[in-house]
Image (cartoon, rainbow, N blue to C red):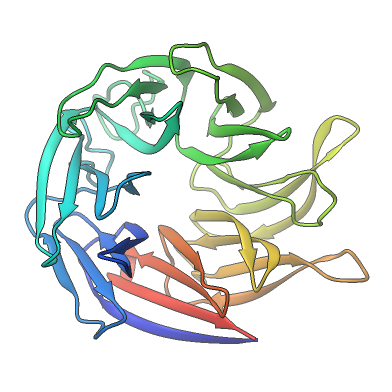
Length: 340
């Protein structure tokens, strides 16, 4: 196994990475408090998507559309996000971008887009309802859903489907109990929100854990047909933990120590089920965890120990795997290529 590291550029407070095709070319996007940049393999020269106000937590490609994404803006360090909003960005054939605001959603921290009965839908988590000061957690966050209209840049109605989540921080999509689900986490634990058949239907909600979780991801790391859950605990915490379902209960089977844990991802690396977990402080490790063949033990290799990413995006190309990291505290946009 080899790892090639390429520093794509420097970007102040870079936080949100994404990988998507722009005009048919895989493109690597990264945004922070002041700008959003795009890079591709043609010359690796960064181009500007926007260079005005940022505060971007997420960049989400629009399913079923080319060259378009929705992103958050105006969510700044210290949880300054009362005016956070979502914007629509679209690139033309000459790689020129047009960015339009959609609507304000205070304290929107994570969101995703999905198609349900050919309708484009939104699901988003608010970190809290409001704040008087940075450590004010007295007004818990919610999870909202809504159906986006034909005109992407028009506001749309939101309805809450889960309320009362303090430090509503963790958010991931995947299969749980063999059903399409979003997992949400906060002080109260981890909740699985199962997609309904119609956008107007109620969402089935199941609580999976009952203690404070910062972030989580899911993956069948041991190939037994059942998903495992990887977490960072507690909020921005110092432990990366992998849980397995034993006798109907999630039990920890592996733990690794971090400082300021922030990244947790599940999927395949080198065609093996993997969790990637990383910390923003201390050793700033970004590690890949896999099950060792034969012994069944969980082992790991270190992708990097200099970056300290806030978030990553992963692209499996078939020949290699690409990991785009937003190494916020050193203001570095980094691409790792992993291959045999």
